[in-house]
Image 1 (cartoon, rainbow, N blue to C red):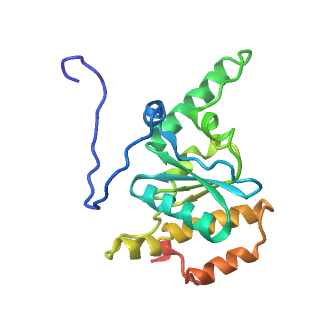
Image 2: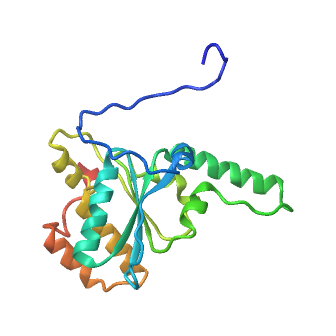
Length: 212
């Protein structure tokens, strides 16, 4: 960086949650660098309702687990996308927005978010272990129904499982958010949301995490 006089910086995020990464699939390097790539594709699901799950950071594994819950318990085909940078996705969206402003007669172009998600179907649910404001950064370029989950609230000390359940970002809360989005789109019956809350032991009148 110094030798090339590049005006950039790099950072490494280190956590103490141990797991064996599976490694990226072939042909996703461009998506990793641009902020989004498909990690789990669902094919041949017939007429099953479909959702797109966007997982970032440590909660990518919860998104993957939620996709299994949705498929196993509710017959929902859930594809999973790895978000490597909401910031990079927003920067790309802003560049496309600016391009359209200064080139009104040119052929419209799509942001990377639109290129990835526009060809898919179903509501889109994004989960991050940061505040919901982070996944909300890209809302302007998400092509359809978009639900965000994050750890809004004050810092707490507990196990990871308990904290993720408290902040409503674990696999079961992701699954319920997806079911609600499907119900809002008229793709499933709303009774399934109530059934899911009972099945996973989630009280409908629990207080908001950000009120603590």
